Length: 92
Image (cartoon, rainbow, N blue to C red; front, side, top):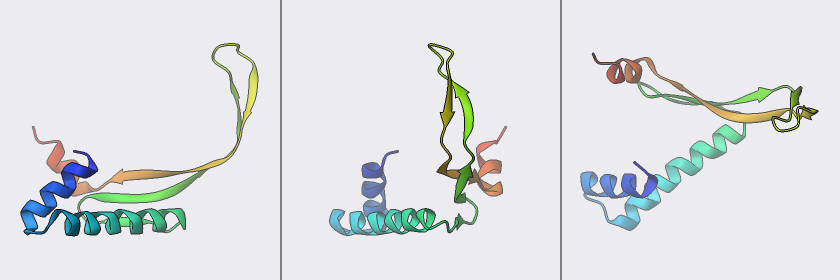
């Protein structure tokens, strides 16, 4: 499901106009994004959590030439699945 499909499903389920649904979904994701960028974690109980992870710089290799290159430190968002979602997905 992509964002557009989510907006349509939300509008149908909640009886909202497409514009109102888009506003709510956009506001939700914008606020999540701002929180993650600020280094605050975002936790959605039963679903999972998002946080910013810092990676140290290291020496890597160019796969084509084999030459050593320095990889700069970086920050990336990471997602950790919640226990309830993990259990629902792993139904056997």
